[in-house]
Length: 414
Figure 1 (spheres, rainbow, N blue to C red):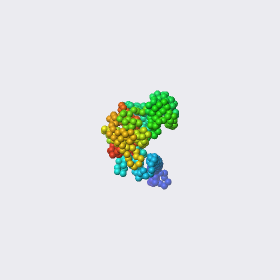
Figure 2: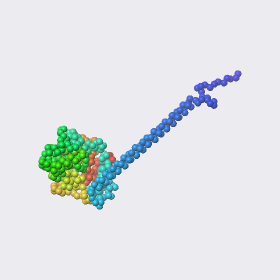
Figure 3: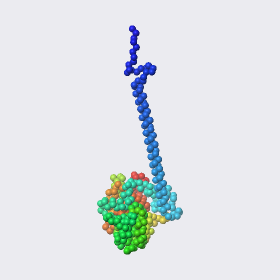
Figure 4: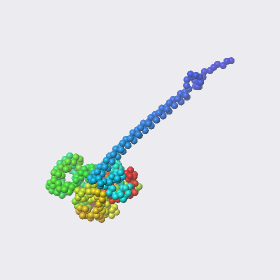
């Protein structure tokens, strides 16, 4: 009996020509397409990511290039701000990052340049060690005054008399606002000395020492001045100016130069191997001269004498050179006062105060403190991110201290 052909089951695959594709084959094809699509998408995302990273790299390079140009021009401006003949300059040291005067200050012909923080490093890198938002706390003298008033330190603060802006003075403490002329006549006693400072600034720029000597007579930066001269100078300042009472000095400090306030610069930074415990790197006594116009600012011709951290006694003083010879002074070149061997009063109290303040502000890390020694003890005047590296390193290179080198390496300075 002939057998009857049977139709293939729908579940079974058929090899006949023109038969529909099996479900497994369809699924494999779809899976392959999905994998291909994912691969293409992944490659596209990677390409986009690489392109974005490349764009970010270009932007970083542009920022670095811009920063380098700005810093380079700042370096050159610093070099040529010193008005001298070209034969006094030392351009061979520029490529090593040192200004001409720094090469003389540090005697780089004999000393190892690698032991010193160079001018390029201090202008281009030290200012990036602390976040800009935190630097503002130190840069703004008014903000710093308010901060120090709240720290609870066992120290007096520099009295703030008022803030001048747009012809009026806001008198502190209180809410009184009066015309500048009335402030000068009614709020400054005869014989009273004040310092007028911009809220922001460095190197003593636009800082004036003003003392009232009579009804309408003053002395400004050691020179006689009329009421109109003082008024017009202050009224002409386009930015807010703080007016501070001059703090009386201890007799030993005043003896260094009786015509000026002679301040101390103390540099603190964290020891990164000891839980960021702050330590004092170096301290110097700044002393005013006739050349500095009776303020103690180093860049204007003031003196700098290193303070022995253990004893508080002064070494010889130096100042920015006018040529290729560095001067050292055991006695003051103008008033004849003894510098070398002089004792800083309240030295132990000064160190304790600075270290306590540095600990309470340890998030700021790197601070150059300006201190006045009053008849009753140390008073914190200012804090600075710009520590005035050459006023310190004229005495010794900072990078020979392993703690200093470790910190600067950690923060990318050296």
